[in-house]
Length: 156
Image 1 (cartoon, rainbow, N blue to C red):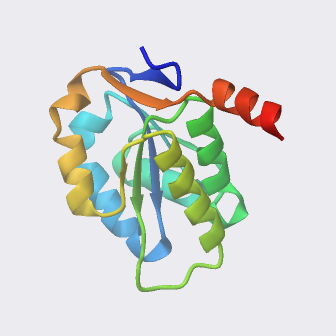
Image 2 (image 1 turned 45 degrees about the horizontal axis):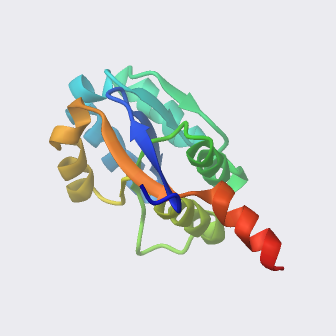
């Protein structure tokens, strides 16, 4: 086995982050209502306003972090690093400038670094939630960060 990578397992019960820009919140709420029977079997979290609105409109329990512009995107990114978020549904608004765009980019980057599935629109979210992987464990490889850090520290 290549020790440059480690294998992580996304469990059968997923830890799903739900995020939406203001102009996409209604669409995400509708998507959650449509997929409520699937989502109720997983642990849900989200940025502040979005989490509250999903819970209020669908009855799904969603753990809320801060609002995105107030650090919520960063909190979810940290949960990815900690292995506590496996899957991200982020309905982003490509037509409206976001004041916290650097935070959004950091979240997307950390999801990519940790090989976390991420959907940024309804079509990709539909494909992900209907995947056979939603009902089973999924193993994926990420960079062995401990080894990488050790080697980097030795060369600096």
